[in-house]
Length: 201
Image (tube, rainbow, N blue to C red):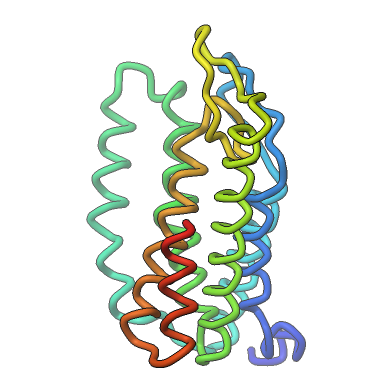
């Protein structure tokens, strides 16, 4: 079964995890509130990441960590909520998106992050994404050309679009938390750089 896993994927599946994070920074063109499903490049990368993680499991390296079982009640709860909703079919896209973001991708990252280098790679991608979103949200304020939503100017939209400000805020907050944690752990100039980065976020 181990032959099912190509050597290149065995050495660096965490590259897909980093790519998934970075692809969220591609500008969003999904400002249409009438569209229920928006498929992006990051979605495609996340599908590839889950496929690689599944291949790793089939090949027997590594084994699924026991801590992954904490996601079981979450899956059962959201499945029950979807099945008992007034319109389960209409709820299906949200159900699939929930499983993607809160179950499948976390499991895939848990499987593909094996070495310290993998953690630094994905963590670096997350910080880079936070820097892009944070910088992008400042530009409209400088140029005074923010987006309008319901006749109100909304400046801090990042690359997620005016209708998904929380997407931008989530990425920036993750980068802030990671940099702040590094600032508490590191020493010397590295600590100063990490805390300064957290402050900029």
